[in-house]
Amino acid sequence: MTLKYGLLGLINLIPMTGYELDKEFKDSLKYIWQATSSQIYSELDNMEQKGWLASERVVQDEKPNKRVYSITEKGKAELMDWMSTPKADVTNALTGKNAFLFRVLLAGSLNKEQALKLLNSFRAVCIDLKTAQEDIRMAIERDELVYDPKNIMFFNLVALHGAMTLQARLEWVEKAINIVENSQM
Image (cartoon, rainbow, N blue to C red; front, side, top):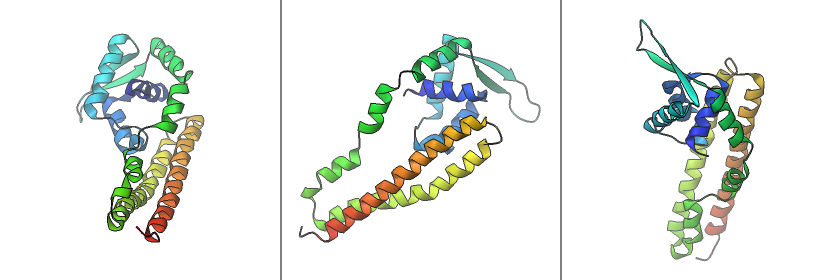
């Protein structure tokens, strides 16, 4: 995925400001896609120049003015074209780069203590992420007030994928630690 399609999809759900989009990426979307503020604002400008988005300046008395983006028909056509050709993304989701597993693959050059340190660091990150899943659940509950129930169903499917993937990783690392601890390395 490129960031532009993620932004188009979010704006297709509900018109948003750059600030709101940035907050979504930093809060709940960071587990599936990461983007910096500068990347988001740059993409929004590019897509507006292409005619995929339109923006409206909203003047506010108590707060700074804001710019609300909405998707155009041209933008919807671009988004639907991307949504209807997911094969490359599916393959990437299953075969993406994983530097940590590459380290594990090469961990035979470590002593037992070093290998356990590597695996235990992974376990600690998984446990931290399990705690962070509560934030995701709360974000989806908050979103129920704004988004169509059909969209909430798919938000929950992504959250379910994250929870099940994390559970599988925790089970794997526990077994891996047990194997290394009981090895003769």
